[in-house]
Image (cartoon, rainbow, N blue to C red; front, side, top):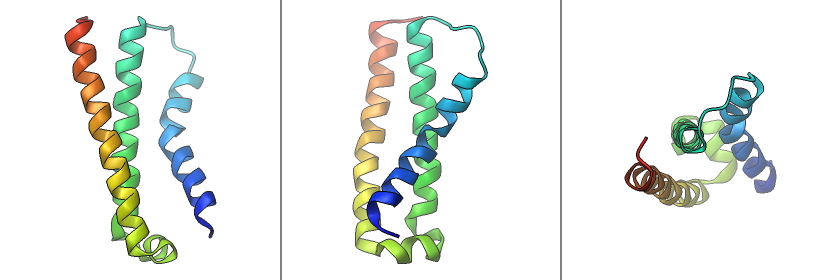
Length: 96
């Protein structure tokens, strides 16, 4: 598999919980609560998908190569830390 297809699959797997929760049609909460819940779901999805990509399954890591797998892992670790910072900033600036 080429890497653009794998990147697309990765993004779709990460966004799947958000799409599923949106499709349930529950009544909306305040923007800040929805934003915080969305960030939490994205962080959990990234952790789950990175577990799959971190070499636990050979058929995934062997198609990419270990160097690419580790670079992707480092890239998404940075974004996960940014996600955590945004959650803390949200709680500090807009307490619920």
